[in-house]
Structures are given as structure tokens and as C-alpha cells.
Amino acid sequence: MSAALLQILLNGAASGGVYALVALGYTLIFSVLGVINFAQGALFSLGGYLTFLLMGGRIGVNGALPGWHLPVALPFWMALLLAAIGAGVVALLVERVAFAPLRRRGADPLLSLITSLGAGVVLVNLLQILMGAEGYAFPAGAAALEGLPEALLIGGARIRTVQVVLLLISAGAVAALTVWLERSRTGQAMRAVAEDPTAARLMGIHSGAIVRLAFLLSGMLAGLGGGLIGLSVSLAGPYFGISFGLKGLAVLVLGGLGSVPGAIAGGLLMGLAEALIPSAASGWRDALAFAVLFAVLVLRPSGLLGRRLQEKV
Amino acid sequence: MNTIALLELDQLQVHYGSVQALAGVSLRVNRGEFVCLLGSNGAGKSTTLRAISRLVPATGGEIRWRGGDLAKVPAHRTLRLGIGHCPEGRRLLNRQTVAFNLELGAYLRRDRLGISSDLDRCYALFPRLAERRRQQAGSLSGGEQQMVAIARALMGRPELLMLDEPSLGLAPKLVAEVMGVLEALHKQGQTILLVEQNAQAALEIADRGYVLEAGRLQLEGSAKDLLGDEQLRAAYLGQ
Image (tube, rainbow over all chains, first blue to last red; front, side):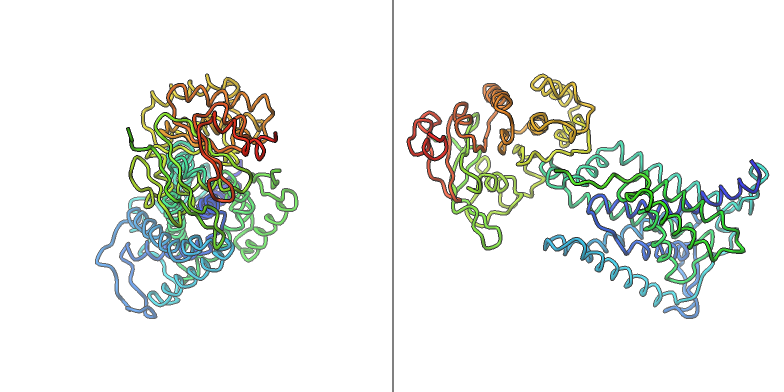
């Protein structure tokens, strides 16, 4: 295999991994509630900013407290983990204000598309008030990945270390989550709630708690993605997560709504498709990504690994 | 001798919005008893079970379980208290295997050995399920699905087993098979509350029965008396 091709594959897999994270976040909530959480992109932004702040990053001149920073400067790993937890907790809050009241009143689940979008807009704007609209780069790249070289030579291909870290962490998170869903007792409960909440309750499963768990986990996935992209690219303003949120949505549809393997496969396919576009023509990346989505949907309307849409009689 | 009933409904009322589904239903199930609740479509039979399982809130009256009020208990706690509900329409997880469905019935239990011996007991009770344990529940025939639903409820080791129309849509031969299993369970000491439209089949195996009509109790008595009741025969047994 030529070095150039290997490079493309690894880069594609790295960004594909992040897309898979975002898409899995959507999948978790979609499978238990049958709705899309449109605040997912904002949680992605939040994860990036929280990681930045926890690493000791300073708020810029347009922020609410110019020059302020947390009295800590955690290593990237720890900051990323805490930021993911933080985003997960905020996702619980989003569930509280944007989803739970509608469910209690038995409202049309579609309405939560609007309420969650609203929650996302509020979140992003809070970030903007606090941090300003400017972009941020993570504190000195060296501090982020202490002791690791800037780039690695793998099979003759030169790969940025950050990309490898991105791929390993997202692959690890995706694998852990998949195994957990498949094997654990709580994972079984989640599958039961996804298929029939009433039956699940009759088996003694607290479906409300399972729904909250799904939000916590999906917020953590989004937060993780935001922190990783912040490290590898930078934070391009509070709205940077929204475009990843949209891309994740495309991946979700590409892979098949509600399918965990679909979200992973879709993320990788999307990442690889984008990596094929040389950086000189990077403006075409989104175009290609959505062209791939279009083509797949024409051939397989339920997505790559989605269940055939059929009504049971 | 007046012992505390295992389950006692006292003037239970349920409303769906402004529509009254149950207008004060009182009944009791003693430990070890086999009680059936009969009535036509829409009489409120399923609603009664759903109220006991706390899937719908009671709007009046009381549900007492072992003498205690169930009003504040959430639905996911009722099985823990000993109330098993094999619901209307079976509600199996159709995309999961038969084995997964049965294991889910034992979700609250931690006794691995007990669970696996109960699984064997279920497969002995319904040998057909043993052959199909790795199949998706949704791919089974209606009768087999009903067996999975009953077995799943049994896996929770409920003190009271409530069944909602297990004979619905089954061929006569299968109805007899299902009723035979219920009769056998009762003989082993299982307390059962059976909701049925098939009054004849239910009364033949039950100890006592209640007849519900438009949200009110019309008749109650021993199964033997009800089987001989002219009014009931005319209304439900088509004779």
C-alpha cells in the first residue's frame, strides 16, 4: 500500500471516529425515545470549551471575564474526561427542560425537535457570552501531548500524533460502549426500553432512569468529540460544534437510524470520503460528504445497516 | 376467619381524560386462588389490570396489596412487590430472541441458579419454546408468542400472576393447551388473576369469577355458580 493512501486512510479514520462518536450520541437517544436531540452539536461545542478551560486556557478579550482562567491546568487526558462528564451532565439538564416536560404531557415527540434545538441555541449563546466569538487554540500543543513527538511515521506515512490519539480514543469509546450495550444488564434494559417501554416497566425496569442514562452517555460522547476536535484543529468559535452535529446527523441517516454498527460504519465512510479530497480543495469536503449520503439513500433508503422500514400487520 | 386478601380493590375508579373506564370496582384475590375477570370488549377488564400494575393512575378508590395501599407505587416497582402482569397484546420484544425475552422477565432477580432452573421449568412447560429459544420472538406464531409472554411473566416469580386474554386469537386446541398450563400452575400453588372474554374456558379452571360490564361489576360468585348462571349464559356463553 502506498504511503499516501495509508495517510488518507488514517486521516479519514481519525475524523470518521469523531463522526461516529456524534452519531452514536444521536443513536442512543433515538433508540430509547425515537427522537433526535438537536442540542447534540451545542454539547459538542461545550465539550471543546470545557476541555480548553480545564487545561488552564484563558478567556479572550471579548469574553465575559477577559483574561480569566481556571486556577488549574490539567493534562489533556484528564481535562477531556472531565469535560465529557460535564457535557453529559448538561445533557441531563437538556433532557429535563426540553424533553421531560413534553413526555409528561404526552405531547407529540416531534415537538422535542424544536425544544432541543432551542436548548442548543441557548447553550451556544451562553458559550458566546462567556467566551466571546473568537476562536481558541488549545494551550501549547506540547502541553497537550507531553512526551509524544509531533508526528509519527507509520509504514512510510507521516501522521500527526494528534490524529492517532483521536482515532484511539474514539475507537476505544465506541468499542467500550458497544460491548457494554451488548453485554451488561443495563444495556439489556436499554434495549428493552428502546423496543417497548411498557413491557420494560412491567419487567421492573425504571424506564425514566434508562432515558436519563442515555442522555448522560450521549452528552459524554458529544463532549468527548468536541474536546478531541479542539485538540486536533482548534475551537473555531462557539458554533463550531453545530457543523459536527449536522455531520453526525448525516452519518446517523447514512448508517441507518437507531443502528449502533450503522453509526460506526457511517462515521468511517464519511471520514474516508472527506479524506479523499485534497486539502487544497477542502471546500468540497462537505459537498462530497452529503453527495455520499444522497447516493446511499437512493440505493438503500433505510441507510447502510438500518432495519428495513416495514409496518407489522 | 377473615384473612387479609393478597389483592383487594375497593371502589376502584379510572378515567381516561373525561371518559370513565372503571366506575367503582371492588374485588379480592386471596393467596392461592384462581380468580377470573370476565366481560365483553371495552368492559374495563384490561384497565383493571393496568391500574393494578400502575400503568394507569387510579382516579378514585383504593388498590390494596397485602393490606398496603398501592397508590404511590410506580409501575416499575410492582413486579418487585410480587405482581406479575402478562399484558394485553403480549408486548414481547419482537426483535430479540425468545431466550432474551425470558431472561428479561427475570431482570430484577440476581439468583443465577434459580433463574436457570426457572428457565428449564418454562421450557418444560412449553417444550416448543425450547426449540425456538434462539429465534426472534417476532418470527413465532401467535400461540408460541403467547407462551413466551406467559413464560416471561413466570420468570419474575410473581406472587400474583395476572394474565390479559391469553386465549385471544388462538386456535381452540391452543386455547386448551394454554388453559391447561394455567390450571397446572394453579395446582402448584400459583395465585392467578385471569382476564378473559372466553368465559367458558376460564370458568372451567377458575375458583371464582367476576363479571364486568361498562366499568361496573355485574356478577360475582364461584366459578361453578357462574357457569350455571342463566344471565351469564345468555350474555357470554351464547346459550
